[in-house]
Image (cartoon, rainbow, N blue to C red; front, side):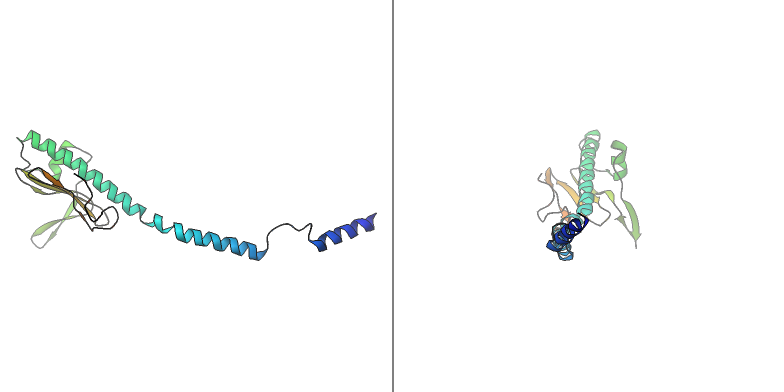
Length: 164
């Protein structure tokens, strides 16, 4: 009985009946397939952080637009004198961009809102991101445009970011 048992086990081993698991080649093929799939899928996720920052800047620009329209309502329909600090008084969630002095000129620096132009009937609001993208809302005599830089990068299409 013992001898028959041993013969059965040796026969099964030689026939490959009791072998379980994967060969090294099978494992390498699976790893190669996973690597190819990862190489295809991962680039789509690389710029998501940049797009999220751009989306935040667009939201901030819209918030500043609502605040500057409120400012104009409170100042007889004029946008003159509107600054990011004035808009922050109306809407505390607005983040003002910092500034730096270059020669005699003060330029915005960092992320946040800048009121680049504010006259009696026109304004330009800029919303800047940490990576240097700028999203604008420009109101010239009631006509709105939404330019952004750099065009074609992140959340800035070549045609502008808003549809009016």
